Image 1 (tube, rainbow, N blue to C red):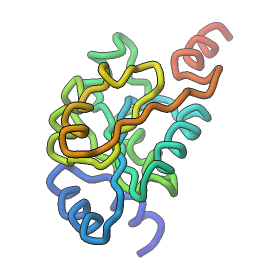
Image 2: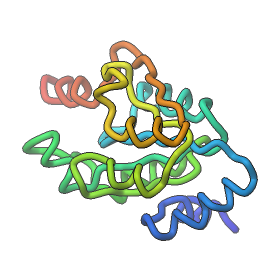
Image 3: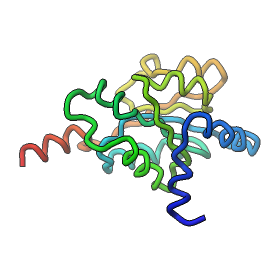
Image 4: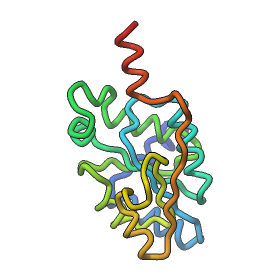
Length: 163
């Protein structure tokens, strides 16, 4: 399998992702899930995702669809389309799978995937993290990760506009 095929094999819909998760579970791999828009991939994202990956053996990233991103972030967003955002994330060696979701939250995706570890940024409390109840009810863990100071898509967007 060449690198192009590997890249595309990591972007999966929900139904295609389930058999891969089952294989990982049979191999006692700890599955970590996180999500976001990841509109303009930057150092803050890389830092966050690498730390999320370190919380287990396999990292699955849920990506807000274009429609979901627009509803959450407003006019002018997303800047990059869902396919581009997903393939950029899939190119990271520590990301094992990427799944686009159209809902405003990943609750239904988390319910389906049943990750062992759910990770979000430390700007959330455990009580505010969507799906934390599902993960904790099955004996899983919910973790928060501090963001790398000074890096955000909004800050980059503002810097570009002010240039």
